Amino acid sequence: MNTHANAASASSIPTHTYAPVIIPMGRLLYWSVLRELWENRSLYIAPVAAAALVLFGFLISTLRLSHTLQSDINSDAGQLNRVVLGSLGFSAMLIMAVTTIVAVFYCLDALYGERRDRSVLFWKSLPVSDLTTVLSKAMIPLVVLPLFTFVLIIVTQWIMLLISSATLLAHGMSAAPFWANAFFPQMALMLLFHLVAIHSLWYAPFYGWLLMVSAWAKRVPLLWAFLPPITISVAERIAFNSSHFASLLRSRMSGPESTAGGMSMSAMSHIDPAGLVLSPGLWIGLAVAAGFLAAAVWLRHNREAI
Image 1: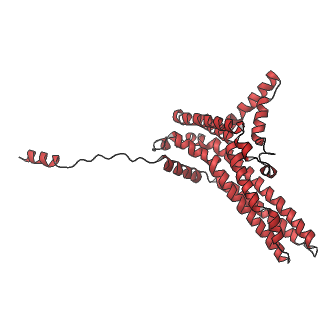
Image 2: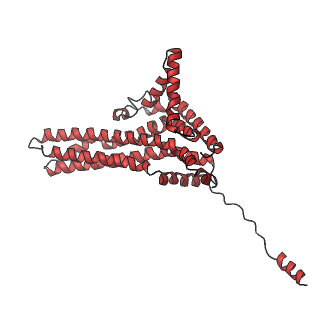
Image 3: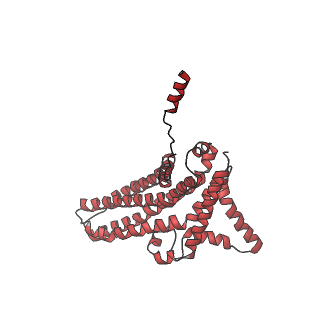
């Protein structure tokens, strides 16, 4: 009787089947990018330190120049204007250079570091695909750093303009002509386009290559990143007495033909958006970058921890 009653009560217990929770890839990508920023704080600490150094030097230069301001307003104000405009360009170049260096070392360590400390075993146990992981790491130099660099440069230049305006007002001069000569909105638009077009899209093959090397190398990824291009260039020079590969790398680093230079402020005013979009070099570079990233995804899936 008891057995029958227990069987009847057991059969009356409802059974539920729970469907697995499917997290959208966009949300996984978002949290993966946040994880990269949390684990690699040098991504924003180094550019901020460069901006602070620029502001410190500019403040000293402005204080020294303010002691020379005399009754000749036009001459002194013009001198201050030249100093400030030159400092604006230098600040942008320095912050962009530091950010580029940070992006290079980040890419080299992005996939190599997690294999070296064997944390890749933990991250692979999470419901995050290799594609999502590699894309989140690629978004740091291609999306996050250019946008962060733009904001940091704008804030730095605004502070420099405010310091200069305060110096002029303290000596009884008007700051309105000074702001009119700064061309700040135009400079901001050119800077944004420069960062997106050059530092993101045009340099994408370099970042893809570095991520692939990071996923492949067992040790010293910096050496494996630069040794093959150097070897190919030297071998071509010895075998064919030519330097086409080295010229290709130099032209890629200096920016498209529609610019005067990849990193200079003068290049920003010479960028032709239509010419850049229609440039075969841009699309070939993006295709090469996609191939490198696909190889990085495959390597992360098949490469073991070091």
